[in-house]
Amino acid sequence: MIKRILVLLTAILIAIWFLSPVVLIVISSLTPSAEYYDPQRILPRSLTLSHLRSLFVTLDGWRATLNSLQVAGMSIGISFLFGIPAAYALTRFVFRGKNTLRLGILMTRSFPVLIIGVPLVVLYLRIGISDTLFGVALAHTSMVLPFVVLISSSIIGGVSVEYEEAGMVFGLSRFGSFMRITMPLVLPGLAASAIFAFIMSWNEVFVAAVLTLTNRTLPAHILNTAMTAPDYFKFAAGTIMAVPAMVFIFFTRKYLISLWGISLK
Amino acid sequence: MTYKRGLTPYLYFIPVIAFLIMFLGYPLIETFRLAFTHRVGPLGNFSRIIESGELWIALRYTLLISVVVVPLQLVFALALALFINMRFKGYLLLLYIIAIPLALSDVSAALMSYSIFGPSGFVNKILINLGLTDSPVYFFGYMYETRAFWVIVLTEVWRATPLVFVILLAGLQSVNKEYLEAADVFGFSRWTKLRKITLPILKPAILSALLIRTLFAFQIFGVVWLLAGRDIRILAGEAFYWQTIRYNSNVAASYGLVIAVVSIAISWVYLVILRSREVEGARA
Image (cartoon, rainbow over all chains, first blue to last red; front, side, top):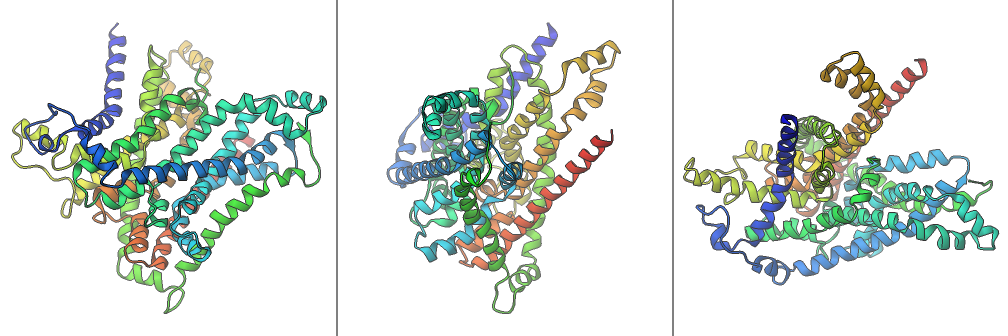
């Protein structure tokens, strides 16, 4: 009995530790300025949406959010287009150098991605895509692509190759067999890894901020305006940045475990 | 499995490899080129930031943050993983709550810290309400670097402990229950079981968590830049400053190169440790 109470108390303390910063910034973003600057008042009596509105409307947050969504969408598109064939080959073929290729892709995960920002500025100026969302998306793809290959290959590997071979016996091409048989089975897993890729791109700030001046993504926009902006802007921005994280945890909670390579049953 | 000879399997990899060469390989080489280009000679950029002491300051702070943050994360994450692994009623809900910071950006986490430790933040409001102070306690700004440093440490521990936690929790799944039951038969204490059974089995997971966290710690940027600006100078922050405010890609690339070299060195040390463990395993 005492042990159960201790476990419960510990669990509550842990939950408070991890949840309170999130709750506090949401409260801060909804607190009217007068109450925020009143030192006597810890929790506000009334809430307001005006800070979120002014972040979106007057402080250009809406455009930055759209930019972020476009960048993430393009990186997911490119990384799946390029990554899925490689993931397929990793699970379906036996060939020389396969392990070396897998290890090589694994190794790129320890590559410090932020250092590509500075050289890419120089490259993009030369090829005429400087300060574009497409340029940021290409940079983010290089960060996301290795993850997409590795996660997708483990997901595709979970579907027995015999189904595909049966399809091929009945006259489907290799591609047709993959698309009509394996694809529907792996779609939920691929959706989870797409959300994972989305979060990586949505959160990335250094490269995005270095590569753009006018077409800023949301974190880059925040980074460049937060120093001079009033406090409520920071809290509204922090709240908006955090929303996809909550959605991510909610929708991928079943895959969370397998995305990070766990099998808790 | 389909056995394939010839070129077909490699064709599937061409897009990925071409892309990674273009956007990781080429920028790495270009970083070297930029860093070693200066009008007085190839080492001009480095002698500039070494002689002014700037490189040392940034390297020192980056190291200091890593050395303080990574062990704290490891200890907390281990405790959390062992606790969740007790599988008490409702442990999944707690697991999801702990997982929230996994998906949070460093920008978001920094702003959360600011809502707590800012001049009108919750900590100050509580201190004022309790009558412990009349004017706000400042945690950020020039002159308050030490306090800002500890707020940054706290933020990083809060934000990135869950990443270590998931890796360790995954590792804990490979601890065979029978070993622990056997230990119970011999009357081992909890502490002995942890030290003699769980931790040794967990060692690979701990090593890979340490590698990932140390690599990320060396790239720390958003949290420091938003909370302390250049009051606390870090490698990535200096690269950002030289690129976007001083418009000097060469000095920026020099800082980038330092990050790259340190990252490669850390990964190499890790590989060596892993390989020596494999050799030990082969002998045993």
